[in-house]
Length: 152
Image 1 (cartoon, rainbow, N blue to C red):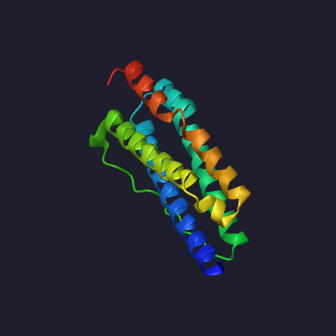
Image 2 (spheres, rainbow, N blue to C red):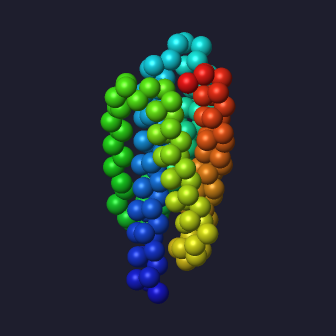
């Protein structure tokens, strides 16, 4: 059983790191979109999208690090996402961000629906994943609404 639990812990850690990487990609794409906007629109993007995604990214990385530390596993090194080409435009960057957020949320939902979080028996991990999903829950809808107001 210890081997199974250790293997499950590593799998959980890897899956959480992959979800956090996707959230980081979304954050990078939102930062790129921000640079293309006027001040008023940029402030709206920051409040409605960048802030929640940034909070989710921080929570995902913290959940990952704390889980790794509790179980004596190596932490993942999260690299800053590369900047995208300005030719993507605001809509392109928002589409990239939404796709990355949806991948991360789907991966976390899959983990939550599996028996793996129960198998590793870590309530803090489960709470962290739930909080990240809560922070990401409205990003797609807010991005669509932002684009409708923005007009592109």
